[in-house]
Amino acid sequence: MNSLDITLTTSIPSAQFDFDHTDLTFRATEWDTYRPEHGKPFPQHDRHMTVYPLKELSRAFSIAGIPRSQQQLIKWETDGVLPPTPFTLGRKRYYSENQIRTIVDIALECGLRPRTHVKKTGFSELVHKELSYILQLELADEQPQA
Image (cartoon, rainbow, N blue to C red):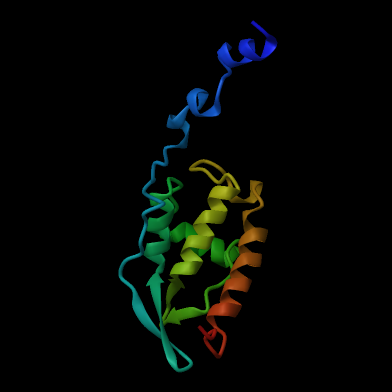
């Protein structure tokens, strides 16, 4: 028996045998499957956007597991934590789906939890930066060419 015979008979761990496939299983959370409800058309230049009431932003926070009331979100806007939304009809605040998703995603990224104070995170700076970019795209005069 030579050294080549030994290597062929010796069990060499293989990634396909030693790999734990259960770690790769994706489990969708409610936030992953979230879809906003109660949209309204909002005239924007020569097209209509769909915007959603403030209660939908509050609902999105709850679905993501970090509940915030409508009153808390209004206070955040008043205190400058959230930038004011350009979508208002009467005295009601509305948000696009992109805004809602971005705000909640940033809150999750910053570690905002039910009992975490927003000022102890970098939430405000990030949300101002990202929303200004999103609004530039959404409020542009022309839609991007497909």
